Amino acid sequence: MPFLFACDPAMPQFDLIATATFGLENVVARELKDLGYSNCRVSDGRVLFSGDEHDIARCNLWLRSADRLLIRLGEFPAGDFGALFDKTIDLPWNELLPVDAEFPVSGRSVRSRLKSVPSVQGCVKKAIVENLKRRYNRFRFDESGTQYPIEVSLLKDVATLTIDTSGPGLHKRGYRQLTGRAPLRETMAAGLVQLSYWNRERLLIDPFCGSGTIPIEAALLGRNIAPGLGRSFLCEDWHWMDRSVFRDARTAARDARLPKLSETILAYDHDPAAIRLSERSATDAGVAVDIRFRRQEVSDLKSKREYGCIVTNPPYGERLGDTEEVEAVYRELGRIFTPLNTWSIYVLTSNRWFEKHYGRRAPRRRKLYNGRLECQYYQYPGPRPPDPQSSE
Image (cartoon, rainbow, N blue to C red; front, side, top):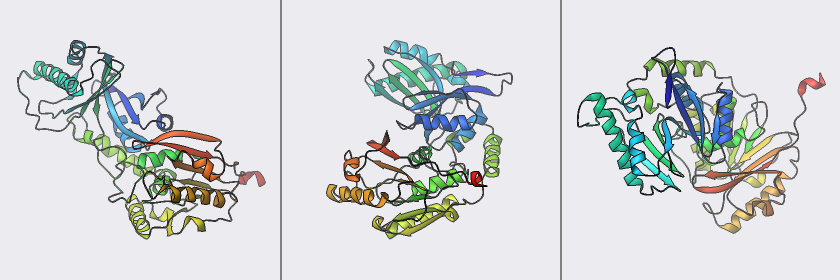
């Protein structure tokens, strides 16, 4: 069932899907667990859980590494168009879509007999219209109202039908109006930080900060600032979504913010234009006080601190500069980071020869996708810093 009505018929429980970039599904599941959702099911590219309209608002505001939040209306075998149509028409579209709803249908098909995506979309659209005809007793729908984006996803002849609650992807935080070259998505940056050993009590350095995404996302995490606090979401305008739901969720999020970080995040880049852009984005995100941006070459990086974290996204070669220059950068990183043998170091790159040029194999690595580009997240975790209280 797509959703079950609880004791209060005005508060349905939905099947929800938090979509995620491949490799970040468990990070999203951990975020949901931290938010109090214990019954999560993880599969490729998505995390399934249950919740009501308050949870839809809360998760849109708080999820850092998820791409979107969807309502799953149904999932069923669909080996032919007859099965797809019959199962789709039986779903409770008329309980969610008003008479003037705009409901565009997008689709995709992977390893399924129904290969023509336009034909699949047309079949689903026709079935939804037939469903709405029964409810509203009319033959035409002008779709002049609020949008309810629908997706039909076919995987191995199983169809999943969803409605997108987010609108623009959750990486659209609202603080980054302009970007530099080859920007890292905010959701990916948040995932990188959460896969590291960094916390608000530790020093963090990004020597290739670019547009400032990693340090800004780290500061939002360290300050417990909801990443969606500065934007709106498509479902806020839906006829069954009470306006007070998002208002209350935002009030609770503002009240949950923590004070300034005890350790200022350090963010460097050789490009002064990138530094100016980063400073502006940090100000718009409300974390300018937590980050010190400075123009600096990576070769000048050094620290007298015994413990700290480096999380960075250096040039790949495929996107910036030429291969020889990038390989020289990796060799320089190996030289610079060698004295920092008690630090935890994390590097995202698509360059398959990174470890060779860096001079050290990573104890851990994780395959991630930066957009459509396959990358490896090389992880060099250092020892745990001593507990300050243990010396008291």
